[in-house]
Length: 605
Image 1 (cartoon, rainbow, N blue to C red):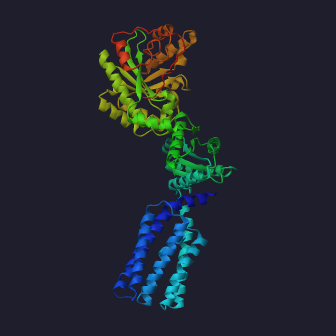
Image 2 (cartoon, rainbow, N blue to C red):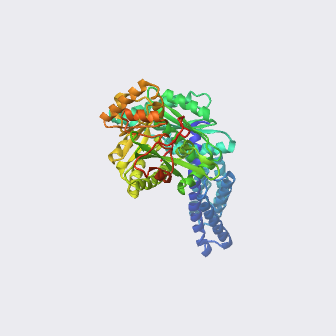
């Protein structure tokens, strides 16, 4: 399928039905009103006038009904043309003079427009001929000159040809003014048509979304004019790469959605092929760095959720780094619906893992971890339902519900131990770049009366290193509001020590893999001691994660690490369990096997 035909097909269902409906409403009103005087003396055949008036009402009702339809079948259109021909011809026969008859015959123009909008040139001319034959016969019966009737025929056929040409050109005007590519409106319409075809022919359909890495910074540094030139060059490179694709290039539609966002509709393309196509497009953009997100249409899926899944995949790619391609995997729709219900009914749970002073075991804070116990499936792993929330646009709503639950649990624990506690919650990359994330955190804090200085939002090191302007801006906004920021899993990424003072953070959480070898490796202990000292100098607080043994607890205390957490101190548990454990002023280490952690405790709150 060519790109032009895809755009044309996409535009027809929406606009053609509306044009046809309104033309029939207007034409029925004109011809119906023309027969009213005939009932009072224009003709000696009032029965004919009444019949015409009834047909006009039928045409009016038909037009109004058509306004509520998405598309009209060809047989329905043929019937509407025949109805219009009968109504106009009878109205011409009822006209008191030849001049009035010609004026009434002009109502054919409305139906001619319909013929042009609803079909190609050849079929449109054929339908117009069906319309004009009875009307011209009625004009001849009224004594109208043959030349006048011929002029009317030429006028109507000219309308059909002209409007048909305009219809074919109209989709080409749904273009982006900067790049000359199809715009968001054309993309949305083409995607809907592609979904209909995929359903009809039972063929795969994929969507690829593309976004330039760091385009905002490029605009600020080099100016918007240079940014526009970059987008024009990128559009040309992507289009050339797509045309060079032997299998999927001809049927695909490339569009610019706005800003630095581009999208591709790829019919007859499965998930693996879509990912390969995305990688080729990313490579074609070099040296410019772009990320891509792909999604394969699932059975029963409409255009909007398909596009949302692709957008979620793109957001994941951008949160992980530059020049990456992420695919939205197939989902368990029933589980998604259950997750929506669980969020709405506040059935998601939160457990708390203590954060302690390793020197004396005193409780200093807690990390909130999300849990979901499904009524039929049992415990659903956090990485499963968090991924579902990210993929289906639920992560912000879920994060709000979990934050409220975490504060409620931490409040009960704080009241029981009689002192303020630090509460840390996890934020995903999709949450962080969402414009409502920071306002909703502040709103929840205000509603629950939890102090911002006792809340810490944890983000992964890879997210900060992804160089996302939106993410960094959100972190700075959180800190401006008095909320702490922690870099989680520090030591697993590629941050250099020289960049530690540039991190928009107040806490460093050392990954358990970094801690695991300190008992056996003197060099690792020396590195930990230096890292703690350096962090203290630049105002960062180090939290050692994954403390599993008493030796590890002793060593992190000896090197001066101020905070620690792990199974050696306590497993994640509900607030009620921690209340019983921590009512004492200090914490004795809980009995736990010196083995690898059986519960990673990952989650989002």
